[in-house]
Length: 216
Figure (cartoon, rainbow, N blue to C red):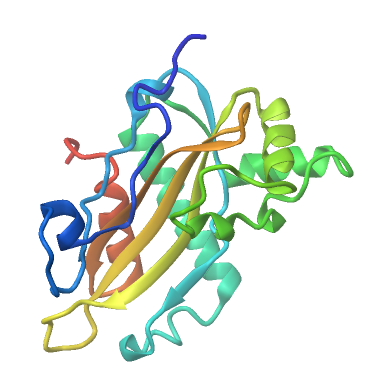
């Protein structure tokens, strides 16, 4: 088997408890684990599907109800940011973005499930390693037409008020991302990418950039 992920089945949790990481008991609040870089070396030269984002939420304290009121427009803008940045910052991967996946599904009705209806938000749970059916079979069928084995899933995007900011409007975007090997139906890599901003799009952009460090 060629072009395997160099980090095979490395599932990185979203949080690192002080007591677990340091080996000492502590009552301190858990701190976020650093964003794990996207393992592009293991998927370079391959077709990798980027599924549409299906879950976006924001804490009430941010008062972003108006900004995020149109769910479809919000999801489309997030997909655009993700696709544009990953294509520009990880060009060694042949990305098949949400628009292409939707076209494939439309051309194969009854065979391929609509990628917007696949239930990918369930993958935000950090304890999931084996992908259960029907999602497992849906992704495998999709990749049979895309031509590849790996799927990058942005499982959920949550905006939280950044602690210590007096304005109460600065947010931290938390983007839960998993990479799935559809041939075996397993999560091979997982991280939560974080980025701060005064609006959703700036925060998300900085979070995605943290997935591909080393590029301006």
